[in-house]
Length: 89
Ligand code: SF4
Ligand code: SF4
Image (tube, helix red, strand yellow):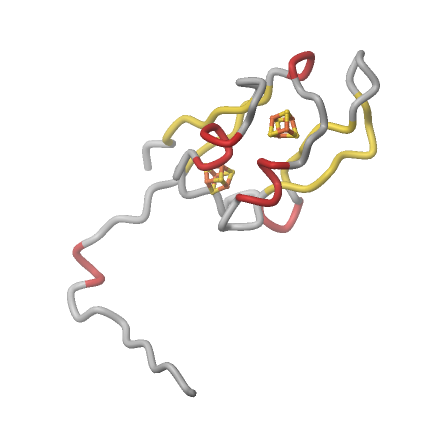
């Protein structure tokens, strides 16, 4: 079954928020939940490890401006290791 979506006629009245991601490196346990739940695919697994030996998330180079400050990553992180702040434009 096909599903048709339409662009809301008043879309121009809404401003899409932008966020900046902050990570508290030493708290991360490399569970990747933040990466999997990000609806904007902003995050990826870093090749680097923190002092506990876990691969922490990093911003994808091709998605640097894609964060919409939805805070899903913050909500799912079991270690309170990641958060975002809205960027004023
Ligand atoms: S705030 Fe939302 S869009 Fe931004 S990195 Fe977290 S989950 Fe992704
Ligand atoms: S959800 Fe938290 S602990 Fe898990 S990888 Fe992301 S920042 Fe690290």
